[in-house]
Amino acid sequence: QVQLVESGGGWVQPGESLRLACAASPKIISSYSVAWFRQGPGTQRELVARISNDGRPKYGDFVKGRFTISRDNAERTVFLQMNSLKPEDTAVYYCNSFPVAASWGQGTQVTVSS
View 1 (cartoon, rainbow, N blue to C red):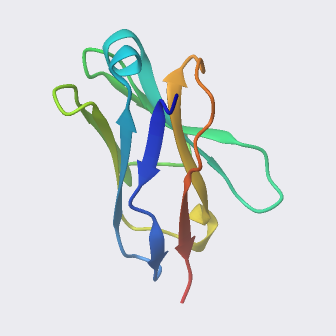
View 2: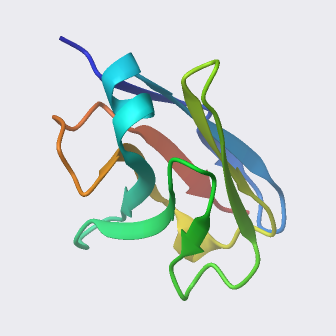
């Protein structure tokens, strides 16, 4: 049973933007906070941002105002708007419940390079 599907990744140049989308199952979107994580080459998976059921966001320190997480419960989708992207943002981005309670999806690759 697929519970989370990420999309929206791609290749962009430094300074550009991307909007990621996470389609979540009804159980996850109705019961949990949802978070975006990322895993860069040779690094551990890290928390990027999370958003509570009632829409309160929290961000990793490295985001520094560049990313915005939002959710549309009616569409069962959580978004991550990423602006001013840097090469160090290159990673596979995943979404999951927070705390993590579902199997990891395929993720979506984000590559920031000139």
